[in-house]
Length: 401
Ligand code: AMP
Image (tube, rainbow, N blue to C red):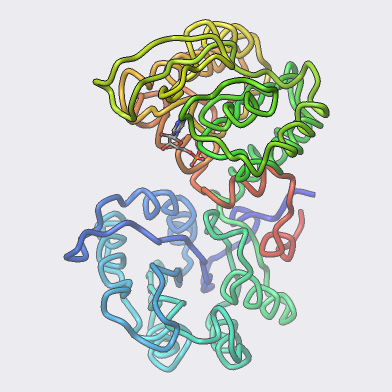
């Protein structure tokens, strides 16, 4: 069932507690180096403010010890940046749901924004006694919105116990626009896909993606494998993989996936390999399973790229997680680039195209295709778990339509 969203509640004269993921990267001096996570939450916050509501925003940042305030993990720079983006003053409470948060919440004007200090300063956020901490947060507001997609696979108190408590008090608990969009693409589009449904899976390790491959094999028409993980499959088939990255302890598992996948599971037919992990080392293109000793596979070969391109171009739905090669180091970005172009083309033909978070998102951003696909996920671990078909307790607890 779809979840109620922030658009389904009337925030006029109300205070909404919004859990966001403002875990932004920072320089050594604390400057925010990428504010995308803050910008992604703006539609939800602005929707509350423009309809006469007040927003209390909470997030984690980094990994403090959980024993109180640590300046290095303060949300002060984030609150400042949020104020700049919203072009209005944003207050910062010195605690999370304590005395200062309550006093500032009480004097917050309509259309006002209050940022709470890092939720992970509190022992109750991750473990320890939660009761007072949760009660302090739950009593701050009239409704709760979860717009923290990158954290949705976690059950820390601000993600789960707080909405549980607020729901028990009869308060609406809903998703924000970002989480709504992620669920629409990573879960709903996949459950009822337009066919052919093509999954593209790459990256470093098979072990990270076993559950995704397994789940998508049950749903897709084609599963295209690339990246270093292809070499573990190749080795499992008796191929020579030279010095390529392989997981020798995952060969049985690779064989099981090959048996389950049958013709659906497509492996590279050639490989672009090099004598070293470098762009200047001697390079050659070889047939899959024939990588010479001393050579390392760093990208799918051109014949594979062409086969994958043709399958992707005629897809109705595409899900992509993990690059086809070392895209950070040309010329080994070629396979990933061809695949990205094909995904962009499929989008122009009406396909729903979804890029998982983490390195796949970085690859399409770097190659300039982010605007040319239906959805680029903002969550790494959360996106992967959703593609594994897992449900999230932090989302399950929220009100249904
Ligand atoms: P993952 O986080 O598992 O999606 O892996 C992404 C990383 O895998 C990227 O940094 C790529 O450079 C790397 N990668 C992809 N293909 C290969 C390969 N053939 N050999 C080594 N690293 C690779």
